[in-house]
Image 1: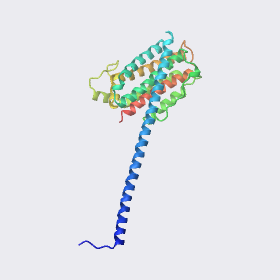
Image 2: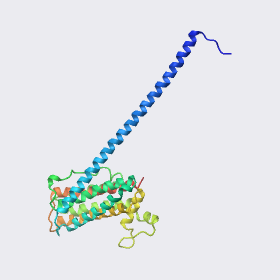
Image 3: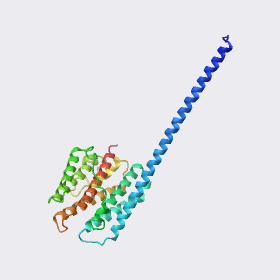
Length: 291
C-alpha cells in the first residue's frame, strides 16, 4: 500500500526530483559543451597544421622551381659538369616521385615532401658552385641535433668530427670531412638494412660490384618496405640522392686540392648544409623503419 505523505513532504520530494533532473541536465550540457570545445580545438589544430603544411609545400615548390630555373640558365662547364649532371638526374628522379605521390599512402607522401627539399638543396649547391647564387642568398645555417645520437652515438661522433674538420684553414679539410660524412651515410643505411636481413627478406636480390655485398638500391628498398612505402620511384630517388651526395664529395676533394682551388666559407657552408640535410633525410627513413 503506497505510503501517505503530507503536502509539504510531497513538495520536498518533487523539488528533490527536479533538482536531480536539473543537475543531470546541467551535467549533460557541460559534457556536451566540453566535447564541442574539444572538437573545435581538434578542428582548429587540424586546420592550422594543414595551413602550415600547405604553406611549407608551396615554399618548397617555389624554392625548387627557382633553383631549377637558375640551373637551366647555366652554361655547361667542364669544371662542374659532374655536379650539374648529378643534379639534373636527381631532379628527373624527383619528377617521377612528384607524378606518382598523390596515389601513395601518408608515409610515402611525407617522404616525397622531404625528397622535394633534397632536390632543391642539390640544385642550390650546383648554383652556388657555378656562381649563380651569391653569398647574400645563402640559406640559413642548419645543424643536426639529436637525429644521429638517437640512432647511434658512434655516428653522432663521426659527424661531429666531420664538422670539426670542415674549416677553410685546414689543408686536409676535404678528405677528413668527406671520409667521415661518407661513413655516416653508409652506416646509416647498413644500420637497419644489413646484408643478412635484406637477404633473408629477398634471397635473390641484386648484389654490388663485387658480387657479394647486397646492392645499395636493394637496401633502400628494404628500408622503404619497413616504412610501409616501398614505391619504386621513391626508391630510385633515394638511390639517386645518395649518388648525388657522393658525387659532391668527389667535387669537394678536387676543390680543396685540385685546379678548382679552395672553396670560400659560404660555399663550404652550402656543401655542409647539403650533406647535413641528406643525413637528416636518411635518418628519417631509418627511424621510420622501426615503426
